Image 1 (tube, rainbow, N blue to C red):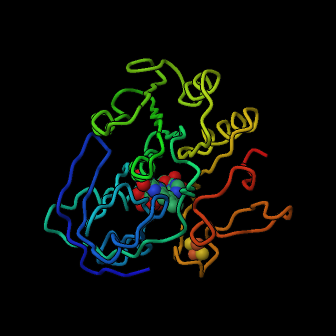
Image 2: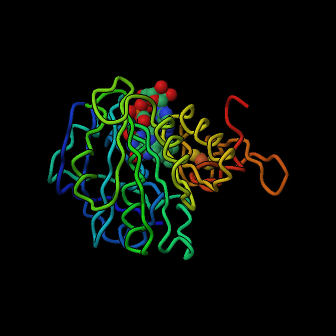
Length: 263
Ligand SMILES: Cc1cc2nc3c(=O)[nH]c(=O)nc-3n(C[C@H](O)[C@H](O)[C@H](O)COP(=O)(O)OP(=O)(O)OC[C@H]3O[C@@H](n4cnc5c(N)ncnc54)[C@H](O)[C@@H]3O)c2cc1C
Ligand code: FES
């Protein structure tokens, strides 16, 4: 992991309260894998004190991208950054999604709800490079919650969209759309990221379909480095229930190890 105190913002894009920033951060970019995240200091002052965790949305050469939704003060401050500004960034943090050689030529479902699509773009790109066939599902409440639609349309893999209000794509939840597709085809694996309720349902669907899966979990984080245990969560590991740190032991976990908050 590296600390880049001067990661320069080279591009920003926005759609309502969703933002994309591209940063020049060579050391971090060279080591980044899909599913890992950055810990970003959003203010030079003490408020907010804690760095904010954000997934690596894409990565190429010496550049990394983040895609985020404004949900509070930290992301609001980050949304105000402009090209030429610098950020203090730690990364890549955590472990990534499993990219297995046996995925070659296989269909792999990548299911994202809202801002949960963030880590799946980089993942789908890497899957495609490795010869797998990513099938991306991108769901939101309404069309304006699908700001990455154009980017996904241009990516060259299959993408299926859903909106809760039917304003675009399948009318319903992204979990319902994924379930519908699972009745027609047999992917080899599923990766998911999104709100806890969405991932809980997706995990049930995968279990019923006997489909192996991994999910990227979220938690409020203190250090992001494994030191404070502020992000700990009960996980089933080798039949034993333990507290593990989402920042260090995750954020990606196999479906069968996750104890969902409703369980
Ligand atoms: C590994 C990881 C990767 C993430 N990747 C992304 C991403 O790519 N894009 C994105 O938009 N968001 C992502 N998040 C969530 C993001 O970190 C939080 O939305 C952000 O830290 C909120 O900070 P804030 O100061 O804006 O809000 P705050 O004022 O701190 O909080 C606003 C609300 O968000 C909740 N919240 C705060 N921090 C988190 C958190 N870490 N996870 C979940 N809820 C939180 C609070 O409980 C509160 O309800 C990720 C979280 C984790 C743990
Ligand atoms: S945030 Fe400190 S241990 Fe995970």
